Amino acid sequence: MAVRLKVNSEACIGCGLCVGSYPEAFEFDDEGKARVIGDIDESLVDEAIGNCPAGAIEQ
Image (cartoon, rainbow, N blue to C red; front, side, top):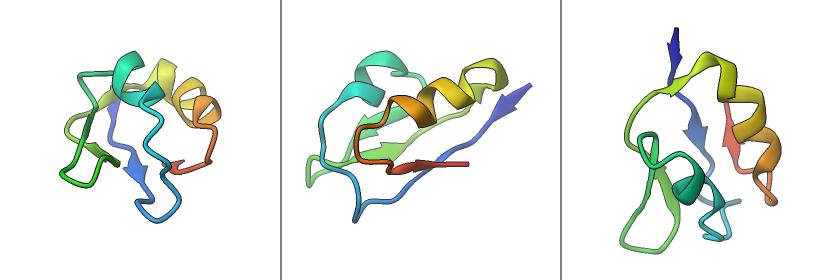
């Protein structure tokens, strides 16, 4: 099952870990912050949320 996550743009520091790890789900916006562009496999949700150093990814 696929899940759509959210990015808190105020918390995002633009490190790029999510974009590099899950390019099907995240990309950079014009301000260099991550934004959601697609769904992520349910089995990767906890990993994606936990890997964000700013805690900006939410379910």
